[in-house]
Amino acid sequence: MLRSGRFTVCNSEDLENGSAICVRAGGHLIALFRAGEQIFALDDTCSHAQASLSEGDIDINCMTVSCPLHGAIFDLGSGEALSSPATSPVKSYAAEETGTEIVVTIP
Ligand code: FES
Image (tube, rainbow, N blue to C red; front, side, top):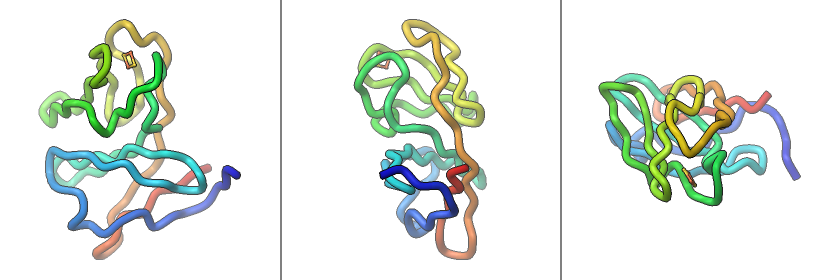
């Protein structure tokens, strides 16, 4: 069952700079990304087909992730699809680091 709220999803040390992990928050599968001091949270499943964006290649300079299956590029902040074959965005969520933990808000 999907729920909304604020969810502590992992410890800060679980998410290294330039990397991603897949977590669950309120029943949603969320891809968490770290680019320096910034944390981003997107739906983990690509909007094109069944692929996990947390397994994609991250570009921390462009703040993007490319899907591991067909290579569509998504904006880490907005979830916007920036290249084909994806044409729809993935949902983005607010994520923050609170002390030693990372919290995701599902509206
Ligand atoms: S599954 Fe992601 S681009 Fe096709």
